[in-house]
Structure formats: C-alpha cells, structure tokens
Length: 630
Image 1 (cartoon, helix red, strand yellow):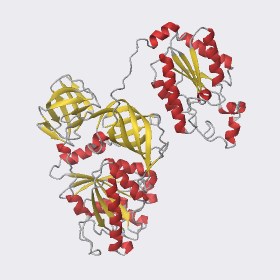
Image 2 (cartoon, rainbow, N blue to C red):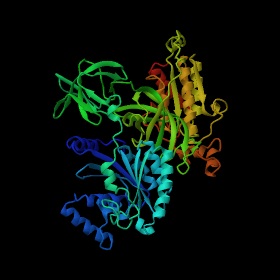
Image 3 (cartoon, rainbow, N blue to C red):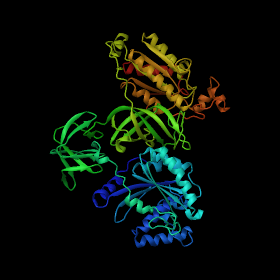
Image 4 (cartoon, rainbow, N blue to C red):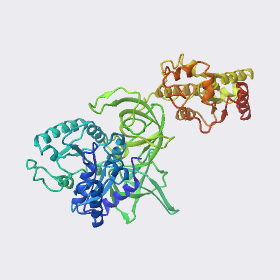
C-alpha cells in the first residue's frame, strides 16, 4: 500500500476537468466496525439512481443470500472482496464514483477494524472531507478518536458526523445532542474546524437524500444536501506555485518538457520559475496538455511545462514561483505507523514525498500520542497503528512544506528497504535547520596521507554472526597477524565496548540499533586515521549493517559472515548464554527469541563448524592481500 494511487489520480483528473461545470468532492467514510459506513455509501449510490438494472438485480439476489429478510443490503454495493462479504466487514479501501446534478463525488469507504487503520489513513490522504459514522448506541469510542486524530493529522478540516442507527435508540434527540457535543469538543482539540452533525438511519435512508419524517426535531441538511453545497476549496489557487516534476517528457530531440500535477497556485505562460533544490531559474515557454496549449493552469491540473532555457531538471525536482519552499535534509514530523515490524530509531528507510525519493533515518522518537486522551507519552518505539512525533534526517535536501501549508509537499511515506512494504505515513511539521556556526572542518592531513604513512589501505572488517560463532577469536587472530606484519589495526569488540562507550545500552531492538550506530561512527573515525578496523559484533539486523556500510566509501567496508549454525553455537555455549536464554533469564537473545538476519551478499563467508579459527584467519588475510589492503 502507498499513499499515492496513479490510476485513481488519473480518474480524478478526468472527473475534475472533463466536467468543469460540476466540481468533484473527494471524501472518506470512517468509523468503527459495524457502524454502517458501507451501508451509508451503498445508500448514496442507490438513491443517486446511478445503478444499472443488472446491478439492482444482483443486489437483490445477494441481499437474499446474505439473509437480510427481504430488505436490500446496501453494504454489498461497496464490499467487493469475498472476505468482506463473508465476514460482513470492510477490509480494503473501496473507491466509488457517483454524481448528482450539482456535483461529482469520489468516496473512499475505509475499514473500521484497528488492524486496518493503515488502510483508513490511505483513504484519508486523498480526501477533502470526511464522513465519520458513530453508532448511536455506542457513542464516541476509541476507534472514533483514532480515526479523527488521523483526519486532523492529514489536514481534513471538514467533517460530517453521521450519528447512525438512530432507529435503535428510538430517534432520541437528547442522545444525538449528547454525542454531537462530545464529538465537537474532540474535533476542536484536533483542529477540525467545520463539523456538521446529522442524525441518520442509513439502512432506511433517513436524512441521507431526504429529510426524515421520524426525526422532525432535526432541521439541518441531509447528508447529500451538505455534500452538494459544502465549500472545501480553501486557498490552494492563491498560494505560491508548486509543481513537482513527475516525468521528464522527451518524445523526440525537438521537445523537452516536464510533466506533473500543479500542487498549489497558478502558472501562466511567461511566468518566471525557479527549479528547486538547485535554485536554477527560467521562464515558462509553453503549457502543454493533450487538448492543446494553455495560457494558464491552476492547482489540480496535470500539464507539461516547457521552459525557455536549457535547464537541468529531473524527476523529484519542484518548479516554484512566489515565496520559496522549504529545502531541508532534516525535519520534524508526525507518523502513523503501518508496519507490523516496530519503528526503530536509527534504522534506514526510503522516504517518498511527492515525486522525490531519498534515504531517511528516524533520528529521534520524541513521543507517542495516546489516542484516548491525546496526551504525549514517552516512547522508544511505535507499533502498528500507533501515532508518534519524530525527527528525520535525509540523505539529501528535500523540497518540502509544512503540511499545514501544503498537503502535497508536506506529506510522505516511509518504505522498508528490505521488505518494500510501506512502513508509515507522515506529515511534516517544520524543518530542522542545522546550526549555522557548525561546519565540517577540512583538514590538510586526511586519511589518504595517513594511510600512505602506514603503507596500507584503510578498511573495516565487520564480523557478524551468532553468539558463540567464533567472531572474537577470529578477529583477535587477524589483529595479531596484522601487528606481526607491521600494519596498524584496532579491534572494536562488542563486549568490550559495552564496558565503556555503550554501557548505557540494553539489548532491546532499539538499543541494538543505537549500539551499531555508535560503533559505525567510531569505525569511521579509525578509517579517517588510516587504520584497518576489526569490528566483532553480533549486529543481527541487516539494515544496521547496511547503515554502517553507507557511512564509508566504496571498498572500505568488508562484511564477514561467520556463518556457524545455531545448533553448533548452542552446543559450544562458551559463556553459558544460550542455557540462560533457554531458561528465560536473557530476554531478546539473538537466535532464541530475537531474530538474526543473515547477510545477503557478504564479501567473506566463514563456517567455523568446518573451519578452525586459524584457517578462518588465513582466509581473511588472503582476501586483504589479494585486494591490496596490506
């Protein structure tokens, strides 16, 4: 799952621009399980009279099979997956398109189960308005708060509160008022400025298209009347122009344009524009569309811009005019965590913002957010569906905005580089600017000079493997051999480091990440000193070893997998650690109740079940000599 959906985007373009007399409203439905979201959407589709005869016949047949006692089960119009129909729940995000004489609509019906909160966040990321359903019997519950918090995070400022199943509380006005007051207080705390509360019975159509005769005390608009007239336009057209480049359009040598969708503002032929982050400048020569050239285009339109000058522009760059955007490699953000694997500060992810992609590290988890109370809580990690505030550091500067100012350039997703799953969706709060008085000090004597003096090529020999595999023994022998050859080396042993530099760290997943980060930074300093560095660490996570490799130049990181099988390591058990782990005395012990991710392409593989420590040492020395490190 991602936060962008190109087929949906193309459909939205067609809806918005091919029928300019009828604007398009994108909205999301959310709420807890069995609050009636799919029924409400199905009722909207049914009452808009856009269903074909065969669809109506299929609905009648399936409603009969579903056992709805002759009444139409409108949820079946939306619940498309077989698993949804079997269980009577929504799992995936279901997009539906319909319209009236006044407006066209794109609705995202999202799941209510906690484990599918990530899908709800995906639907919310496209929406301009949300319909929040509440079961009149249950009132405002935890899932209502969770979904509303996500709506607030994603900048949705218009909410229709549909208090459903009013027939099951006797159409009680006092009950409706009680729920409406409680939700308005919640919305105010979340920054949701516009809330329209409507009592409904979605199954029967009360206050959906037509006013309910069973609730004469309610005199406000129906669901459809509000959706047809609500103004969600905001001020995107009046903001500074932002055009993320999605594609460099070069069909032949005589044409070079830049394709994408205008995120904010207006662009006209002849306008001066700046390419960010390079800060190069040019003018708009043409605004090209499939239907011909335009004199001007506005936010939301997909166009190809042709510049007057031969300027270097790539996918991920942003063409801008007016006030400049933020360009930063560090920022503070809020995350909705999606991945079943927990967030670990220090672990690397791939960040996608607009059309730009870069590597990113969550440097700090500042706090998590308690859904029930919205209080900030101390946290060392986030689990699936939790919300937190973090600082991120990027591999390169990113053209971005605070989400409150620009939804397109202020939102992003994080992707796990190993599984390629979407780990989180985030919104940018503000850029973190580096202290202007701190700069990298260039030194005349660098690692090249120091390595020449030592007559060696600096490198890191990173030995990874299970406890008891023989890493320290092998590293000690290699260190001694290098000393005998007159080479300058130093051994960073994991146990020794925990007596000093890392004595404040435990053995949780997040502590292991920080342990590796510190060792990698120390190893980098030794490389700068022209040394050969031996690192003996279990280092169980592949992403952290990749992080250590990324800190160094090509050829400076040599990964050595001491690939001794678990049963052999446990048989040796030189420190009695496996015995204690099996007895439950050592939680998070690698290989027992904490995973070890074996290297995929190590430079050297050593199995000490078949090799002695001395033979393993000779193999490493042969590698160093063959590659001219010594």
